[in-house]
Image (cartoon, rainbow, N blue to C red):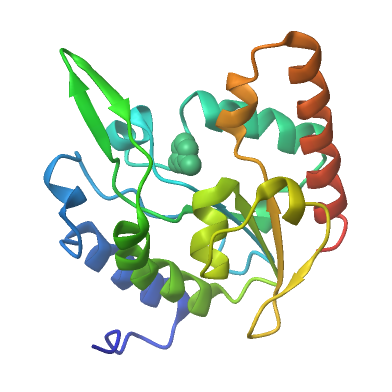
Length: 204
Ligand code: URA
């Protein structure tokens, strides 16, 4: 099917798109999630960041990147002096995929069918915003953006020409940085992430 025709006005079109996504049943993930977590940010943002999927806190709040990974991302963006007014943040998959263990909800990595089903929304966000630069945070986002599996370590650090003329970048997911066990390495990885964000931010 083709996406719905929406109002010509970008703000109205985005609201209509978000409203539709709130009722999404394109894959089974909606069943166990609290709500769809749609992207947010200015619609004229030249820079779009794509994460993996909402986590526990995002699922409850209905907003992307508000939990621990989001807080790390916020600090990294501040340090990199990336202007938040020029940034739209979204996820490759818009429902929280998890497994219940007692009271805890444990994150599960989305798989290809879920990523593909959710491209329906990501593609329309991309169409509507037409950001000049798109950054995939981690492997799931990279897979959604590039349509194939890539190795982060071999793909990061250089721009990728995307069809449609935008510039793509791939880097680590902030939650990877939270999980690096060794403190010295963690600091190093974090520094590298900030440096990349700074370089990317300077291109918009
Ligand atoms: N991790 C993501 O990839 N996205 C979020 O919104 C939160 C955590």
